[in-house]
Amino acid sequence: MFLSGVIEGFYGPLWTVAERRELLDSMKAWGLNTYVYGPKDDLHHRVLWRECYDAAAAAELGERIRACAERGIRFLYALGPGLDIRYGADADFQALRRRLEQLFDLGCRDFGLLFDDIPDRMHPEDAARWGHLASAQCDLTHRLRDALRERGEVRFHFCPTPYCGRMVAAKHGGEGYLETVGRELDPSIPVFWTGPEIVSEKITLEHAAELARILRRPPLIWDNLHANDYDGRRLYCGPYSGRPPALRGLVAGVLCNPNTEFPANFPALHTFAAWVRNPSDAWDPAEAQRSALSDWLPRFASAGQPVQPEDLALFCDVFHLPYSEGPGAEALRSAFDSLLSADPSTWSTEAVRRFLGPAVRLRDFCVRVSELRDRPLFQALHRRVWELREEIDLDIKYVEHHADPARRGKPFHSDFHLPRTYRGGFVASLQSRLHLRPDGSFSPGNPAAQSTGKGP
Ligand code: GDL
View 1: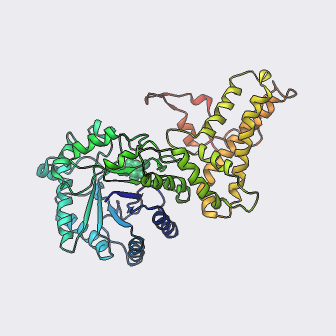
View 2: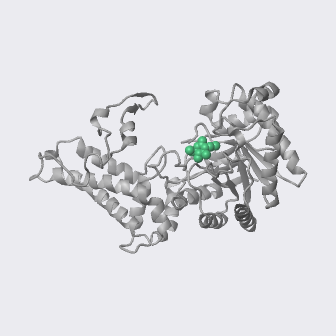
View 3: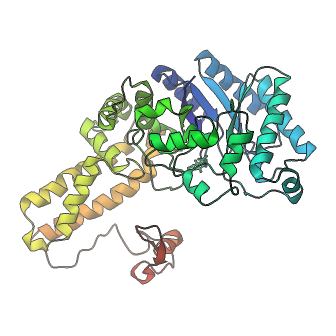
């Protein structure tokens, strides 16, 4: 069975019970078949991996497992013991067994052992026994699976310590890690893989085929395209893209680990599900996005002025995908760039309008967001929208100032964008100190041009 669905597998606040219920309903409606539970900051997933859930948490999990079953969705519980496990310690094995048996008793039959984002070194005794980290992890997976099989039929899944091309190239996990997994892990156990990068812009057929060769099984894609936990300023409301539909024939499945803010995931998951269902090998992300946004628009019912479809589309072009903005955002930025690169006395009315038209629409959309009747959606979008509104408002005022012959040439100030409260704070001051070049290398930046870092 081709696995398609959603991983709750990011860092940061977990989704709520109501959000998960909505997710499962949408997944059923959209034809997605797998939900993976493994949020990094459920303490019992990583830090307290030895401790079983208390009665209340277990009851909630049991309900969720039932809710999945009722909708024909596979529930996969993922456990990440790698931070401090001793692979050879019986006490640790028994703790893992107890953890998974608790889940088994709640109805769970699909398990994942995740060894991502952990130290890639073992205790010397484990190293002496297994030689390779991969061997210790594969052996542990088999032992656990065999123990659980005494209870009934179960399926296991495995996330390697190097889980993308870049980590393998850096020999994370040790020389020959993936080859060892390919040789030693039971071939019926799917192996997670995020692509050439942790957040992969593209996953090609060649890449998947090469992985399948090394792993001796088709990889199970853990897709971080829409994950935003690594940067509090970003949000991804663009369409699923960069993966040819033919990829479906080369992998065991694709599971998306999306934005931490659940309500913002509508376009990501709607377009992803359309990609999964797409009958042909042709894929038009823009078309999928139009369909997703037309279904999303009713959620933007406002207590004030109504939200227009083209404004929602522009917003999603701004908060688009990690490696690209949508066409509306590109056009807005290029209109602004062409004004900034010319002397304001030469600005044509048309060039000013080309910028101000969409900029004002975007600013107005930001105001609309605070008036949304769907308050969880407002909360999910609020911080990013506020920052966007601050910035776009500044740009509009700047352009209006210099487009006005009476004010042009005089310095531009904004009473709402003041030293230290605007773009201030310690983090921003650190950000200005190291400059990231397009080739990925860092060099000293120009902190003097930024805030003094003294407050507020
Ligand atoms: C990761 C983490 C994931 C996180 C994502 C994006 C995997 C296998 N693990 O490396 O939990 O959400 O990056 O930051 O992807």
